Amino acid sequence: MGFGIHLVKLTRASTMLIFHDKNKIVDAENNMNTTREKAEAERIVNAFESFENDNHATALQTLTSVSPYASMHEDVNNFALDKFANIIMIPFHKRPDTAGGWTDEKLEHKLVNQNLLTTSPCSIGLLVDRGLTSFPKSQKGIRECRIAMLFVGGPDDLEALAYAWRMAGTPHLILTLVRFVPGKDVSELIENVQEEDEVEIFTIIFEREK
Image 1 (cartoon, one colour):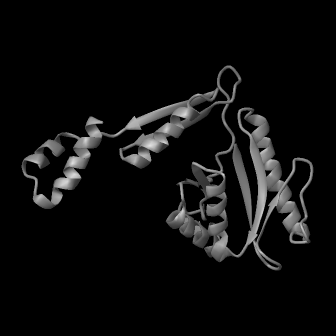
Image 2 (tube, rainbow, N blue to C red; image 1 turned 60 degrees about the horizontal axis):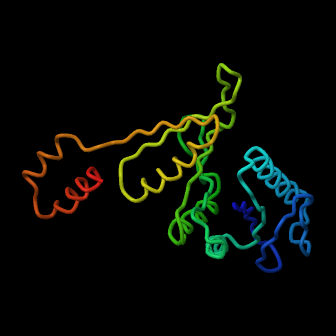
Image 3 (tube, rainbow, N blue to C red; image 1 turned 90 degrees about the vertical axis):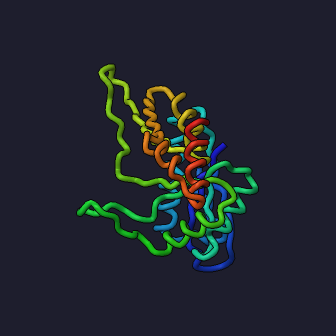
């Protein structure tokens, strides 16, 4: 079971959590009574419903959290704890510019992301949207999605590998896994290892053997 949370800045009343059903957008005590807020909420709910319809093995519940930017991460963390979430996916707070670099979209979004990365009770996935939302068709006319994973080592990469393995079971998804291993220079370093470098060197060896 997955949950899609629409985070809305609190402008009045008190912090609240609004659950949406699949047929209408809930307007609770006029906390989302502007045309822009309703349209944005409806667009987000529709996006999650489309994702659920395209992935029949996925069940999603959409909701809106209305709170100040300074405490948005607390609402997300509390909800993740309540639902025993394994991972929280958050959108990147920067967007690509015409020069090939990145520009901060909103400093408030950056603050929320930083707070989540610091205090999250589970793993965080950072979603970077570069506009690559349309998958090319194969020779058989079937849309294919190609995913690449770079595996260096450590607990974070092992968890990412577990998610990649699950993704590989999705029809028409092609996964390419690239594993990086230490070269001959590591063996040479071991011969001349200094006491302060022991921990790092032996960590590399352990990860390679595992």
